[in-house]
Image (cartoon, rainbow, N blue to C red; front, side):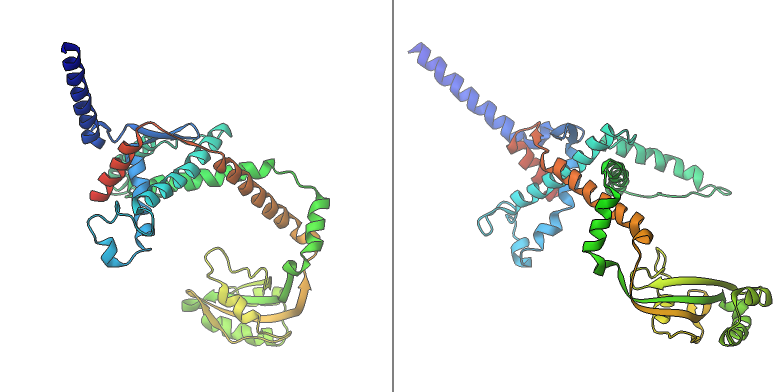
Amino acid sequence: MRNRYVRDVLCIMAVFCAAAVIGCGTKTVKDSDVVMEAAGQAVVKAEYQMILSGHVSEVERKYDTDTVNQESFWTDGQDGARPLDELMQLAEEDLREKKTVAQLAKSSGIEQKTDYLSIAAQLEEKHGGQQDAESPGNVSYGLTALGVREYYDYIYTQVKYELIEHLKKEQVITDEELKELYEENKEAYTSEVSVKALVGEALAETGEEHLLQAAGDMEEGKGLQYLAGKYPNVSFYEIEMSSLNMQEGKSGAYMQRWLTASQMQQGEVCRPFAIGQNIMVMRCLKRTEQSLQPFEEIKGELKSDVQSSLAYEALESHINGTEIALAVSEGQLEEIALEMLKD
């Protein structure tokens, strides 16, 4: 009888202990505590919640406003699944990729700390030095008032870029293989229109008059050397553009130059037009259509493209093989997610 009484008391105590653990939920997990590992890289609670928050709108967009505004939206079943489960799955996929990148970068000798706590500390240090940088007489460059999420994403973007460049070097491809790819995809290297042009460019504020005079000499067929000597306030250059290489620059500031040149015929001089704060005029020196770029001209670009593709395939293979190991219970992880959604 006594043994039965003791057993019952122990059972009741066990139930209360279990309830206490469940009831505590995330209270026992601090922001700096590890909640999971991916590719051997730790993920702390604050990091997990940050990643979760980045996917909230992605999940909410799949439902109408009335459904999203329901108090139990995240935990109620919607179309056979809970939105919370989808949110947590998206976060895990995101972290699987990031931590695989971090692990491969480390093994490749890329010296950049990618754990959340180090990134947060680096950002705090940057902000700490910002006041000195903003003092009179000092000029600050680069990232300044960024939040942890923005700086975290910035670090991982840079690390992934460096990793891909490293993986590209490991992708061996011969000239014969490149030539075969070129022959199989000639249409991809054929320009609908190619134009060689003589360009005159000057500041609109100070050089417009000289440029207009130069346009007349260009119509008469005057060459680059003659024009450069006669109009020192105007920059003259020859450029080759095509529908495959528009030479518009990374900012796209010179797109109008290509759009104008592509409509010109050989010997034609266009009317002056604005490029930002500059003004420009062009003479079409040569125009060809359906022009195949020679293999030797595009071999380097083709090789880089193929190596990039293979590097991304290699990275994707590593990501797919990465498993996530929880450092907390599934119930605690769910409570951590719900805590973020309540804030």
